Image (cartoon, rainbow, N blue to C red):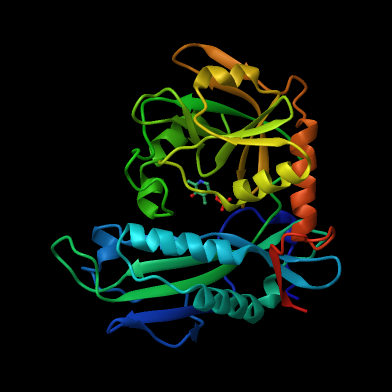
Length: 340
Ligand SMILES: *Cc1c(COP(=O)(O)O)cnc(C)c1O
């Protein structure tokens, strides 16, 4: 293993030895290529540069206490990428090709998979871009699918804890019939001002309301939202949010724990009634929310008075992490051992 200080890793890019690539030409995907360059040689008129034909994914590989390396629900990431491909008219990557490339790039860079004890992990970033030249707005005829990895530090350095969020009304991340449900770079470009504003005001992250009525809770930054009340896990149903695989998993676990699960529009006022709330995604699994401020109305919705995460969030978080690390039985078949 590389002699890196895993405990000091943040969420940044760190060079590893290899990435894997696959090119789409003449209507079909080619062979998987192993590459040691971090660069892409790109035509200046490539559609990814001008018209946003760009999709990505994010998942993690974990070095587990039993010595094995596991990845979490990569078939779900493959399926979501396929949905994104259909959404912005790019050729789909089969689940088989996706999984083969993930396994390959993780094995090639196994020296960079942090130790279990460090709490760090190997972040896997699949990227699909349109590469052929096009001046008019049309889908490209050629694409490259690249997967690189980079070690990332633990999300909670000082232990599982809460953060304040803020509702931002001046910006929309995505429209009801737009690309919010696809993992495309354009949504992130649309979120940068709101994210900057939230950070400037001292919040961990910005919260979007639905773009049409500005009435319902949508997403927070690059994470889905959930609230807990009366033994029920409630999460927004909306056409403009990205279907989080973490959220999907938490809904299943909540059900396993005997909670009710509701996926439905959540009016902002309902925040008042939640006993716990959190943001969820691959990066943190759950990032519990202390309070959400609505600056326009001056309203503050508080979920944690002492700054500590609530018991159900804690239980869900611990259980999901234990499945990822092969500590608790993986009854839903969510993990795949990539290195034995
Ligand atoms: C990636 C992403 C998420 C989280 O999805 P996970 O599959 O749980 O990592 C949530 N919202 C947005 C906008 C995202 O891009």
